[in-house]
Image 1 (cartoon, one colour):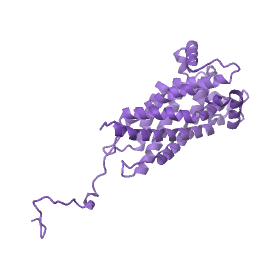
Image 2 (image 1 turned 90 degrees about the horizontal axis):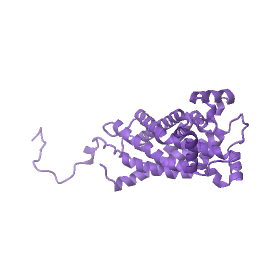
Image 3 (image 1 turned 60 degrees about the vertical axis):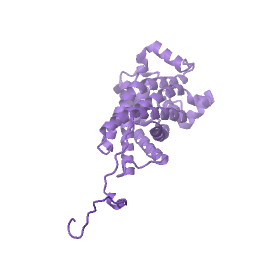
Image 4 (image 1 turned 180 degrees about the horizontal axis):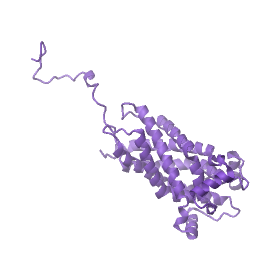
Length: 321
């Protein structure tokens, strides 16, 4: 007996405890993504995404290279597409694709692998990652992908696209172009604009993962294991992409100029920024914003959708717990 009228049976009850008594139990711990799975899923997502969205990247880069003082060759997005197709056919919109395909797979692999590695160590005891830590983990992922993959990849891509505007293009393909660049400028030739690239990629991923982490935490509330369908993931990814475009397009313009065929005109990243401001005005820092906005929103949405879905499959076939 315990107290008045309360009997404690010495035998276990054959019936389950009422569900209401378990309601106050703490929520389960969120599952962590193994960095190995992140590398595989990120690489696959990056390769598929760039094949879908490359024409918008091509147009954006052409508009950013089209300096006002030349005078400008293109009157806008439509005119750029029209002139390119007239001069080189539809395949002209895919000039430089190979350099991005070869680079996008390791870029996304490094990005998501590093992010999961860092975020797994930054989560609280319930496996929850707060927005600020998401920003810092994204910054770390962006910096590493910039140094190891993005800078050489972007330099080659920009040179390929810029080369097409010449009367006599000299690059015949990816490997030929890389060989010509290295022969003329050494390995350093593939690392033009490193500072601008680190600033751009670091801020890119910091903004995107901050927004994505914030939206995920809002959506999941107190249930860290709440499932997210692809539509929700894609919508959040598009919002994160848009935020990064408005946040760092000036850095993207500077990076593009520092990696073009006329990069010798600039002494440094700061000198490039000052010359753009002096000769072209503040608006020049937002050249290519519209095509970049369309490309990046689609890019980030597709990448996060494919990444999350591939991770789900890997969780079934690859047990790491």
